[in-house]
Image 1 (cartoon, one colour):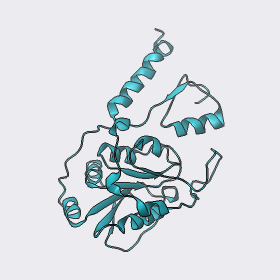
Image 2 (cartoon, rainbow, N blue to C red):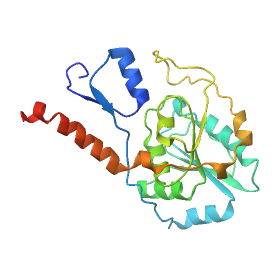
Image 3 (cartoon, one colour):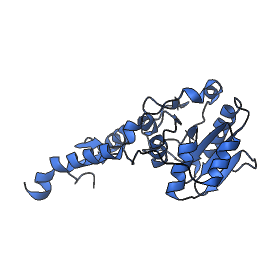
Length: 230
């Protein structure tokens, strides 16, 4: 497919670098995932009660497996939460591979999309320490709801949050070699001891669906003579 296509759309610069590293240069463009960036209203009573009871609310979200680093997300929350009198971490998504029996770590499992957006809208920060993620939609959605994101510098997640949020350096450099996604590098989370969540900002412009749609339209328009002979 790569060899025979006329143009490639990559989700992130990370994807572009990985693809061209293994398969060579190709005509194409990076277009990140987008979403309607309007802020939603939190109407769910359970969420309102969680928000009322906690000084800070954190969230993490994925279809969980080792690459997503749920264990490290919880460790990061533990460091961040020490600054506050009351806080909680909401864990969204199926098959959590690290479960702790604590009242301040709340496992919601799979919930519908509109409720996910309400969780992001009411949260003070998302913790997304996944290793080598490409362009995670959960981060796109969190940013659309003005929720700052804490991620690592591997993969394409850092490209979504731009100057907003917080990027934690990996302890080892990944050089696009073939690897085992279920064996992520260890992390040094000590930086989080000094992080003030209140200082984190969000730039929603990178996740605006209209921007993504315009970029896709341009790609198709530029290649219209190939598809339609015009």
